[in-house]
Amino acid sequence: MANHNSRHTIILLQNSHNRATRTFMDYDSIGQAMDGICGLYERKLKEINPSLRNLSYDIADLYNFIDGLADMSALVYEHSISAYLPYDRQWIKQKAFNHLKRLANGGR
Image 1 (cartoon, rainbow, N blue to C red):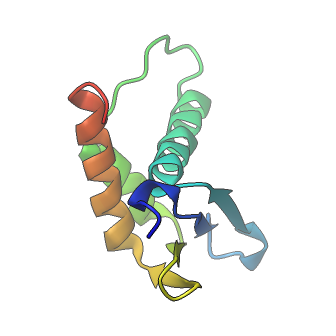
Image 2: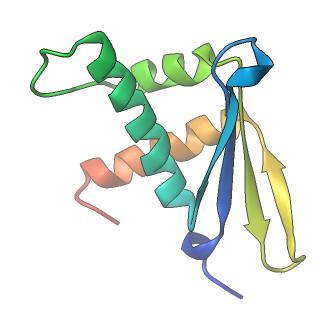
């Protein structure tokens, strides 16, 4: 059984109600996917506040960003069944929270 961290993860997102804004990002692990979502949010913050040197935000800000997207979901590869399992926005928010908590506590 491969460990939790080596599960290929695809994040599906749609920025607005315009279907042309649909896109996806893929990662080698759930943790990398959560880094990617945080990075997406940080880029958005930099667009809004280009003169800001240091970005800081809390989990509520990240949740608002995720909730503000027209759609966001994840597909995570499950080795035991050799297939991708779908997860919703709430699951992504929980994983992002756990990921940021781990980072705040100095890593893994």
